[in-house]
Length: 425
Image: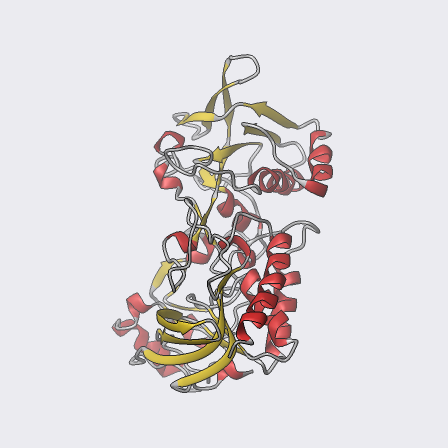
């Protein structure tokens, strides 16, 4: 696998795939397995994207160790795929079939000699917020990104690369793998087509002042719930209240937190209703007596996922409330939270007290903040708009809000489109 070798200044490939999440990995694999050379570029420290941070995902409710690990195995065994992490695109010139891309590789401060033995982490005394767990815990300043990290190498948080405390890590490493003076490197890639699979980020719940995320301990987001329920998460899979670590006996799910709202996200992210119902099953499995309250505008469970919705409705401890939560407040002393909503069927103002509230924040395309090159058209929300005249192909959530299964299907189509474009070389 070429990723573990030093990167030359100029590389060539049939397709450049930007984004190493489930869509990007799928596009790269499908392209490489028909004999085309692919560069898979990821700006973060590891492949896997948002799916790697999930506890389970539809339709089979698999853990990421199922789907992501299979993809990583296929990537490792395919000589047609070149993986570049900590990479960002600086410039793209040319036309479909003949692109020249300038890429900057940021320093990892750990070279290919790393065996992930963990000796450096043991002696490191510097801690940082763990972004993989959405700040719910901390890691050392030198760390392995997550359980399935690829490349399987440690990385140094650049904020602490110059800290004297990291010299202990250098001294203890018997392989000479830590290079704290490592510098950025610029390379050029010549490719026939570009696939933009940069995925999404959760809408920033700090913008939702009325829902108390930044002020109330026991208000979390849906992505944080995935990490709490994960065995490799901050609590080893034990779902508990952030305020004191207690078990939860009642949980409120707040749908459309910021979504379908002209002041925040005007659109529906399509997957949030089912994601909350899925997360409710996590809670019910751990706490059979827990009461679940889900507040919604209308429930959206497209296609065969309707069966899952019907099954959840049969649970007598799962209560559906038609009404969008307008306000969340904290109960003094107990740190419970009160969800206040108007029942749109009766007009009644309902106040429900629960021990934990989960905000179902929507999906924001990363392409909105980091648009594709070559003046690729975007829609009003930052998703890639279809355009047959551009050589940049969108894949997965770069195109529209979709679940994992739809992202994989979409990525397979993107691979075919890129192969056709690349033939113009």
